[in-house]
Length: 116
Image (tube, rainbow, N blue to C red; front, side, top):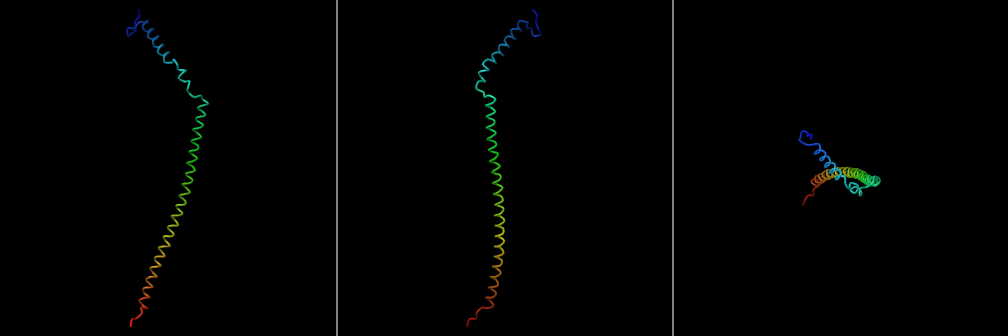
């Protein structure tokens, strides 16, 4: 008998190949049954289309929200501007009021009635 470098005969190698081929065959047993419940290509395309529709709806909602946020920012800017204007008017009014108050005090001192 001929031996290889690991002291195996050709018959031993044949037996090992048979064992290996049997193991591989067992690994493929019932493979067709494992894939019975998987979706078909059309079913998967339908599911992907549904997912794409949902993403499109979400994208549209985000776009709508962005528009609404932009509108709100513009409105807040307008309110801020108007508040600044009111503040300026009140500041001017306060200064005018204080000025008038001082003038009244001066006039009161000048025209203070004399007590007899």
